[in-house]
Length: 169
Image (cartoon, rainbow, N blue to C red; front, side):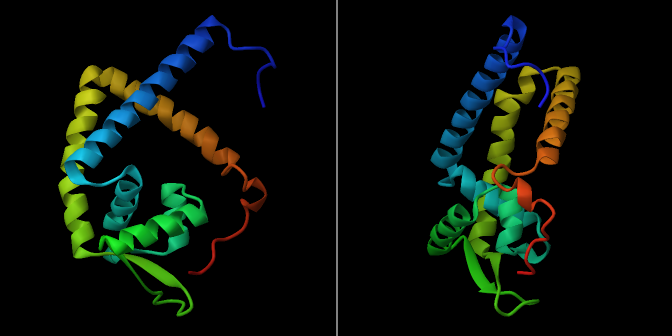
């Protein structure tokens, strides 16, 4: 860890508080409108987006866990609810019969196809349109730097398991 055990100085606190307040309010606003306009939650959107981008609309649960950053139990319970709503199905894994794959259904495809443009409109309205092109580039650079550091540190609670390969299915 770098730095000292001191409290944040005035400039650091301003940066942190502005970032914190912005991301909390932005996610709250995005989540509210996503649910109101599409009936999807943020976790629904994350899963459906990942599946829509996957070859054949199929992913193994461990792959979805990595993409969504959901813990195994949370993902399992959320996928169960999505299966009940007809957005995804669980099917036997083609490569490992004892495993499963999560598959995007036509209803799930319709849901994400309808929600995607609305999400893009809201991201533009509440974030991107407030920034110049240079500010957008700077924000992307900042986010990529922070993400690189966070990813290098590993998943919280699983740092000892970073070198383990994911299961086959």
